[in-house]
Amino acid sequence: MTHTLTTPHPTPTPELAPREQEALRHIAAGHTYLQTARHMGLSKHTVDAYLRRIRAKLNVNTTAEMTRIAIALGL
Image (cartoon, rainbow, N blue to C red):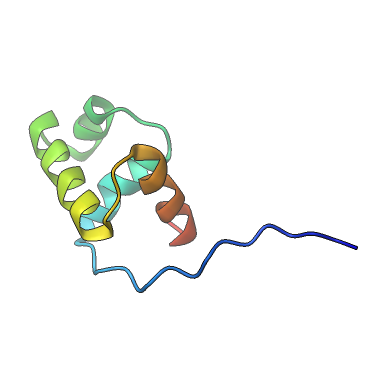
């Protein structure tokens, strides 16, 4: 018998703005807030604000949860 790992089907995620998606993609790739800010041409505070909004929209609390969702969304 073969066992496969499945994840529960999440409820549809709220629409993320393009810059929020970009920030999430960087964080999911393992970049720090500062690295993300430099790459996006933003301040660290702006990246922090994007990620707070993402956490609120996705109803998650940790970077690990955000990363899991980013992977599931194909970001």
